[in-house]
Image 1: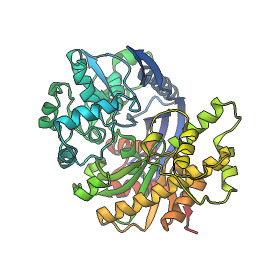
Image 2 (image 1 turned 180 degrees about the horizontal axis):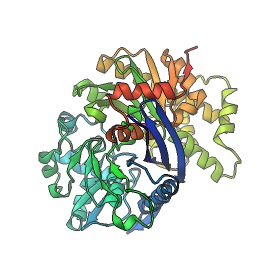
Image 3 (image 1 turned 30 degrees about the vertical axis):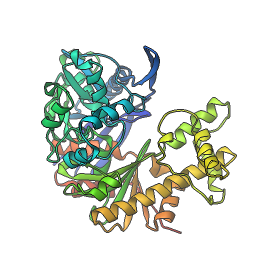
Image 4 (image 1 turned 90 degrees about the horizontal axis):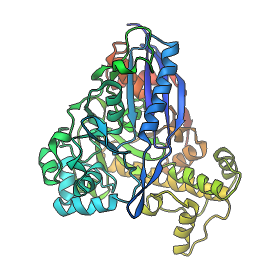
Length: 476
């Protein structure tokens, strides 16, 4: 078995990147070829402003990143694409009908009413075991159906599948991301009965494929944009839900550990062999999402670093000269706050004045909110850590996994204050890293599909453990 190179396209809710990777049985080396912002856009529709993704701009940035790779590596084996979940594009005869809606757009509330009028939340959970989130794809699709959008559309593609379609011309639905739509059965197939009950056209749903499946070669029309000198690389399906890829790269013993994939969201859970469809799990709003190799990501969504990034944007809008590194350094020197807020309160979902909303939460309860940005950062971090710790305890109780350590991967792994606070509040050691877990998981699945690696997830995770620095935080 030899080494070779692949490229991971990793699109997050705030930024995207193209990573160039060299991979082999004892080799895992990633280099950032391109990084670019992912900034939502406001568009006016009738009497309201709507929030969308600039997916065509993202695609252009992806091409720029892959072109940078092509100039230095004509022998690239494969390209894999992952992104955030639930959002999608509608197409007609291969043409995108409009920039995809952002999951934080307010239209999702109407979708919840439409779906629950046809199917109860209890039945939805029994069908697929998906947690209730008001922006899940089925709620968004119900709005599209009610508004007549499917009179024009003949294809629905989730964001990474859309990017892969533009690269190859092949339409598919990768299973880990499709599992976040709410429209798969517990066995992982499209739920034809539910799709029909919601008035959605079954023909719009592309064939499902598993992570590791070759999708196709690059379109000839891209030869100018992506001038690979040799044979063009294959586009390979990976765990296209970014959390599915991230969990592949968690260097854990899944029988004794919980994970937190911490970026814009904090995805907190355990890995299982089978779904848990209990009433207790539904009441706790735990989800059963598809993982690579048929594993189940049994997890719960916590608000995540969105609370920090949106607060920082608000302070900068007010003209304050602050940055997150400086604020975290100041916050570390402050005493641990006596009170924390509920990081899962729905008021924190939409963009806007996050510090004002947090202050309002404290005011409603007769408590004083922190007055300074550094104080607000400290209470945000402690509130997130408290939510993470409680969710880990719930995951262990519901699943029966005896959690002895918590792994934090993603951007949150470089936040030492958050990692230590999570260890303190959970009473468990926290193992932080890798930061680029999503891109690494993407690369590992491609490497195995290309014959550069072999083995199960445990073998892939052992490679991560051998080649990545992990920082340990013990509870104090």
